[in-house]
Image 1 (spheres, rainbow, N blue to C red):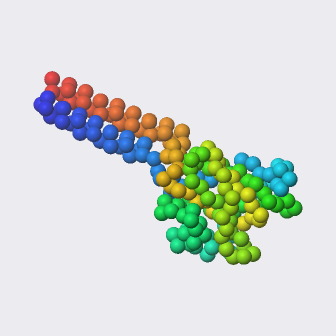
Image 2 (tube, one colour):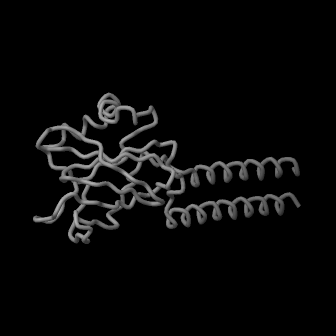
Length: 199
């Protein structure tokens, strides 16, 4: 009977451990949106620009261009020597500035999972030329900055091997801890019940 109890407890413990690993496993940063907003923007004179909008709703007229830049062939063509097999488009945003904004415009984007050592390239779709262009890009912890001469769809390309995996939100982590804790207590209760039954 003692052997049976130990086997049962061991099985439950293994299940808890497996579920715990699943719960705490980090999703691939490249599989989720990493651009969370705009930290700041300045015009050609270095003056702050208010009212910059950023959205995931890309106008239908750009759908073909957006789908194309997500392909390996187009990405390789646009990035040129900056391309490697780990480069992926992690997000595409429609970015707009208020009428009368003095370009070039320097925009600092908040990016989850990005560190100063992350390889990031911002691309901009030049609607008047129907082509994607590389934007001068600088990276810091939690952000990437690009300098734009015009605005329309903006693609964010990242070497996925250089992204930070610390992207789980506190709420998700808390839920995960609670789930594993409940499972652990359940295992303990079952073990205690089996022990009493064997006595």
